[in-house]
Amino acid sequence: MKGTLRARRIGVVMHAWLPVVAGSFVMIFVFEVRKTVLRFFGYGTDTTRTLFV
Image (cartoon, rainbow, N blue to C red):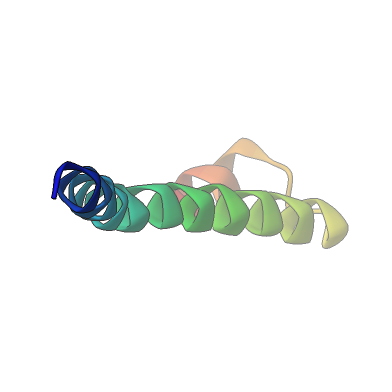
């Protein structure tokens, strides 16, 4: 009984942290891709950066 309770608690914690971790990964990924695309197109100026942030 104790083992299943611990496993269930770990599962709940995992489910709670999964969206947070996934969200942060997506945010970092989108930021990096946007930065790379802007640099690729030569839009590395401050004006376009303020527009895209």
